[in-house]
Image (cartoon, rainbow, N blue to C red; front, top):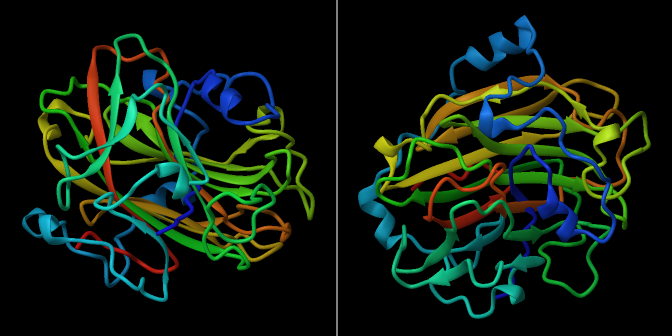
Length: 332
């Protein structure tokens, strides 16, 4: 089954040589001052945003993940109407037939049959001590200026609201350290990889942090190439609560889900929020993701393994049960 994934399972400080490898046109420079792996505080979040971040999860929030049921979970066939993409790695052949991009970094990022949140297969990342970049898997979906004949999903549609869910496990005894990049959701707006917005989820010390970017002004997108930092507008970080990158939580699977709703053009009514094991980590409403731009919607998710500063030891982690949808997915 062919599937497309651009989720920028994403992260940072990013001297993003991984991104420079990924795209033919590079915006140049580093994500200056934003080494989230070493304690960057990022933009100051105003009082209203902080209040939004502290509010209770919305009604109907999914309960904490029941890990006992994971072993029997499989991607449904056919997919529910609200789902765009699903991959559980149980019957995958060549990942390049599923993902828009799949870079295995000389075999360091590969499907294995020795670990699985559901079943026995997952996508394993093997870091070598000191390694910085860079392997990734990108799912493309919706209308997208980058896609030619590569795998893509529901590619005639425009998506303004997307949820994405994955399970992640860090090896038993993982040290108390965040590995920087993990995932991101993007709106690609130009054939040269220019982005209208990015919803990053990466590490900040031992927690996940949302780090949203707008690169649209009025109805236009000034960003050219991948990561045009000079035109990025960082619009306020959303730190999580669960120490998912701690040794204490290593050795077990955890369910991560994120949600982005683009703003109505010309208004500030967008949303960014995320959950771990069904519990809300942070949420922000009243966001201006794209100004008045409407050329393309949300159309890619990355899952990635760029470690700013380099891995502290030889380490492994795994991704499984990737889902992209237009509705809440949950852990079960």
